[in-house]
Amino acid sequence: MYTRTRTLVSCSAMSLAINLARVRKAKGLSQVALAKKAQVSQQLISRLESNVDQTTKKLPQIARALGVHVYDLDPNFMPDAGDLNSEVIEEQEERELLSLFRQVPDHAQKTVLDILRNSPKPEDKSKP
Image (cartoon, rainbow, N blue to C red; front, side, top):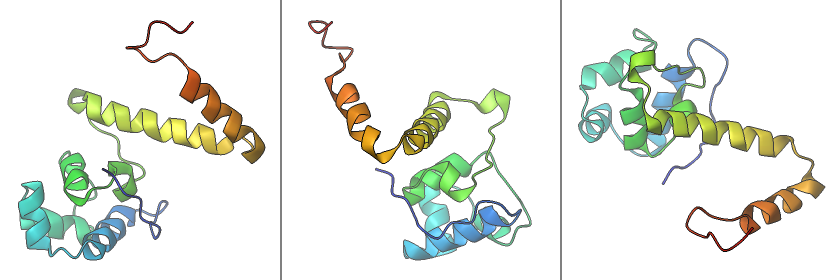
């Protein structure tokens, strides 16, 4: 399950460094503990938090270890074309869906939710 954090930076080049440190500390993890949980080196965590490295293809596994979306750590994260996998694509689609839903006026959000709740599910072929 993913959780959202409220104090995230989204615009500056330092956003990954700041967000990673904030989320890690909010979860009560040391760099060593996070590295172990994410199966990466502590040096990588340190380099990301100090902005020596500004991204890594291991960012999705670090985000998973923290229980957040990769975009909560780096809103500008773009996986290498060869590294695109269904999980990253799903996260991008979820993010887009949520963004679009937030643009719907409040009074219409209930209608949108009702439509989605009542739409046929892949395993439910009986509804039109």
